[in-house]
Image 1 (cartoon, rainbow, N blue to C red):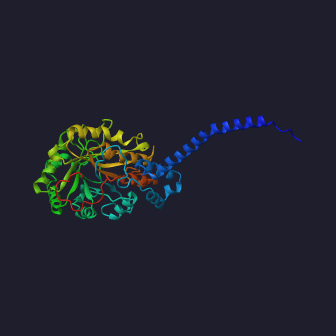
Image 2 (image 1 turned 180 degrees about the vertical axis):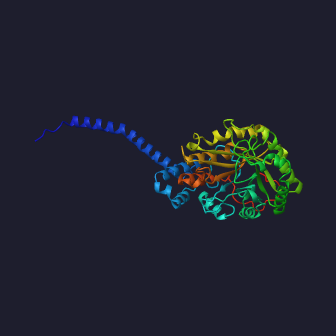
Image 3 (image 1 turned 90 degrees about the horizontal axis):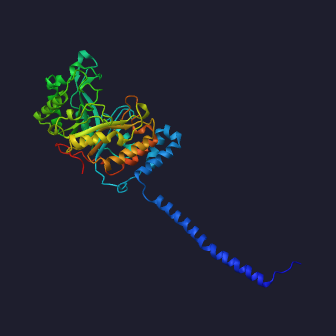
Length: 416
């Protein structure tokens, strides 16, 4: 039979045990309280509206883990619909958000025919973006010379213009003083030919048709003139210094003479972060000949150069235009896009679309280049993550939707 411990020893052990329990109780309670607090924070984060950036990145992560979604257009659309975010009133804080028009140049990859000849392509793009556009851009040159012996001029595109207007969007017409098929050497479409009046009859007829249509449109004439890849740039195609400005003013004067005041003139050079192109100040026609300025620029990624952020591409040229060349003019991004090659296209889109309304106050309109061109993957639908990021960021109410069918014929003002 085991010996019993003395009563005095049992009492001492009980006192020690009570002291240990008493000292550990606050620590255990503190630990439990901490776990409860962390749980509440997690719940709050889950319930609070997340930023556009957070939603886009989450969508990108989900799609990267789902290879089949990347290859399946229907799956991409389903993913895009599941990541609706940044609805009205749920945008990031951090600065005033400047309202702007937005839209795209929409190619034939969605329906087989490009917009605005096929407005079904617009519907497809808007389905991906989960928002209706307020701008639609399309292109035309002066003439078609596929058969050199039977060149013909393109008339004012009243039907496509009306398609856009009835949709509630504003047309952006990119018009170039050249013929197609496009080539750098076009001796019948030099700037001197414009200046000497060789195309005056056509330009006047076009302007009269625009006037008679009577609704406002952006006229982005001879864009990216500071580069060397189009036949209307100085230094190519026999064009001499000073002729770009003179030709611009000549065409503008014809529109004024016939009363085509519904054309809002957009002077739109290419971004030049490395100062590789012609000086912009020598190419600016003057405030009385320009209503809006513009910029075109792409993140070519590994497809052509190094991966580059929106800010590193746009900031320096934007500052030059808005700071010294045309500080009183609003600015329209005529073409922008990013490749998938060399980085995260989804994150690039998110960063760009969040930066524009907060860090670039003079940008009052933006057009995505949703077209396969130059062998590049510009459209937003090249991946589920890119489409999802675009859909998330464009929900910011700063990007205005299609409520502009009844604008008057005067110069287009920035949205308010």
